[in-house]
Image 1 (cartoon, each protein chain N blue to C red):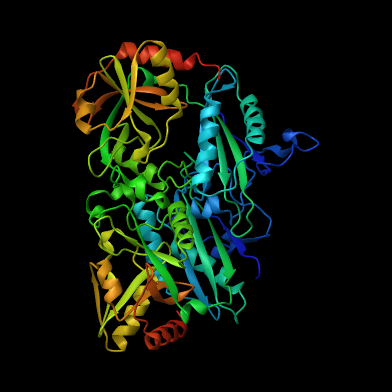
Image 2: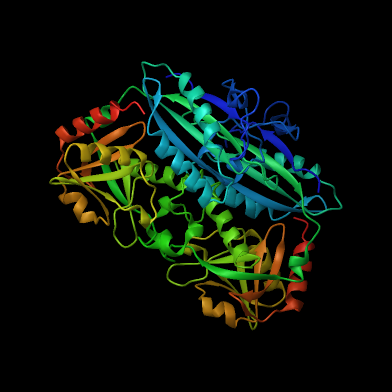
Length: 297
Length: 297
């Protein structure tokens, strides 16, 4: 698999005018072994920043507006200076153009608070060719449910815990994936301490119940899923109803299909929850992945 | 204030023999503007690593064994390769020697999971001269209590949430300090969702009740405090009893003194909790800080 390609960004303020050389002049492709982050950068010492990962199909970054909205929203939740989305858009295009057009891939946007006390954010992008094994889209995944520790109504009263922000502080998400693997599963679904389905460490949860597609509502402290939004838009075109609401663990097991959705892996049908086989809807999986793959923006 | 000084470390395996040039040869002082972290390092993209910050007095790093134990423990909780403590000890001494001996300071040790998939940890150290304003030790701090969202018995059943590990994923800790400032306070004390005192975002909580010093027991998912351990050792020498146990918020307000303890700031007496003045024990504060400042290891 080719090495990821990193692009350093001279992060501009949201209201900064485009420089004489264009935003292109603020983006620099760096060598594979070239460090670009200072040892004192708060991304590296505190996980203090935000990120997004966009899928890239045939050279087209996907769901750009949804990702950019979420990047700006995460920055606001962390009280970071607002990102200059015009600049990030140019940088993203440059990163996307570095990927082979015949492969699926992803672009990660990283926005850090920068050096402590300097009040100057830092940022960079990482373009990656995806592993060609997309068997998750057809074979699906076994998942386990794991406690997220938080009540479902946390975000109403504890914004300092950063519910809904996609921060660089993902050590817990990574540990959760290791726990899932230890239990013989491919992924995990977080459940609130009072029993509601939340999200997976790197993806959103989607259920089908008859003619209705359901996803956990985001005000329970989870991320708004960019691929989930695309899936709902497709499903509405196909005549499905869609609902954002509280979802119980029992509903996971009783559904006509459950999927994890993410930007690069797309839709992964769930075949087992906590060791119990659940209904698998291969037809809808295929239709959904085809629809997601047909997007060009 | 002088700039922090960064030292890059070629991280060795725990069982690696000392190289021919000594461990010294694996430590390199880097320039103030020299990046040392790759854009793909998991410290910078996932907060996926661990750290320690040691206080330095007259050139002597403090509570080294406690910090090294915790570094190794955090690494184990994150399933990182065990750190080579002999190497880190040499690196720490080199970093400490770069600080002026007539100033108080700190050394941060950062151990990252490294590059995704490479299975090779990365690491560095940051030596910093402390701000000379230690008024926190005499004037004290106002604090607010803020919900940590987790029940006090979390660590028994959800180790994947990494209770007790000092990870690089500190975005929430930083957001909590901003919330405290917004409320006109100097710091925050986390309370579990079921009402028990936990810790502060960067320090431990200590209470005096008569002749007994109390700290919240660590099995409620908080860090074992290295300065708290030193404080208990001193207090035992002075004839106090010490207890690790569950502590309620009411007890905070009814104590004969409350302190936040950390490696560089040392003991900060708390003067107010959630806007209510509490008993301040200046005599014990002074004695405790004098005792902590007299340590030479």
